[in-house]
Length: 369
Image 1 (spheres, rainbow, N blue to C red):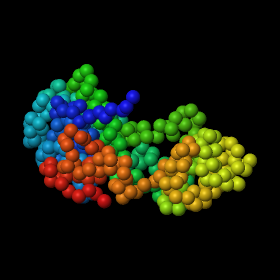
Image 2 (cartoon, rainbow, N blue to C red; image 1 turned 135 degrees about the vertical axis):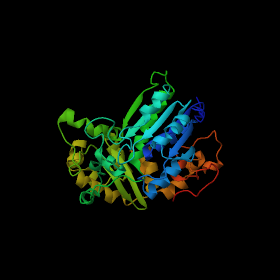
Image 3 (spheres, rainbow, N blue to C red; image 1 turned 45 degrees about the vertical axis):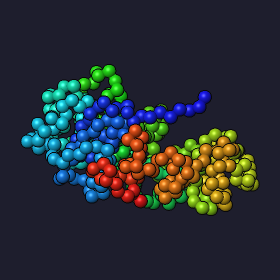
């Protein structure tokens, strides 16, 4: 049966949503809903604690929204905010880094006037609890969820151990928190209406903890704490060099290892009894990874990818943004098309990430390189 393409652009076309976010997670949440057809009205304050780079990213995330500039936390503007929210299905509010300007979200006041609204309130550590009022920027939130513990396990691992913890690029933590908030929002606005008048408390820390689902279960199940300097290895491979770049290999099962042996031409060391079982390979993972790196470096990335996939080896090329921009498959799907050149009925979830427009639709800017 042939696959059918489904157009999701109009899923939320009857809905009006107000985005009061002072951060990138809420802006991403509103962006995701706008991509599904919702009419999103954003309010942005000129005076914020965002950096210049974060402000530029905010503009990118707001390209499909109608934007007004005023301080929604100024008591004199409360009626103006309430007017924007009249008839809306949802309001998105994200706390500024330093804390709530009014000591709490203004969502409660808005809901008192508009009881049919649902509010999504996004903050670093939630609306309650001992850390609720802690100041936190994206770097703090990212590490508050334990992501500094996660470093790649590959032939360069000994070098990684000497480096300080860093965060993932491109405000990854903020976008993940915003995406999960958007999932909750989508469930609410397409549901039975039971959440009208409620505030949905979205903690960025808790959202990012969900990305550690394999690590989180190890402590309650085995009592083991994960340490970035003593990683828990469950597979053979990792990010490995090729003659023209890098690939990632994740060989978890015996048949995958056997396919990898064939892919690399059955080197003598790989057929040794010392590496017969996955348990034996894991016990010597640093040595195995170094030897694998020597083998993969003899071949091109494309050869390892295409022939490895044919042999059932979980392997994929590591591609740069420059390479992705000219990838034939992604180009065929229109992933990197300019938003102003697309039909309004063809949403592109990634246009605000790789290219963006000015505050007015149709005022196109070059894609971020």
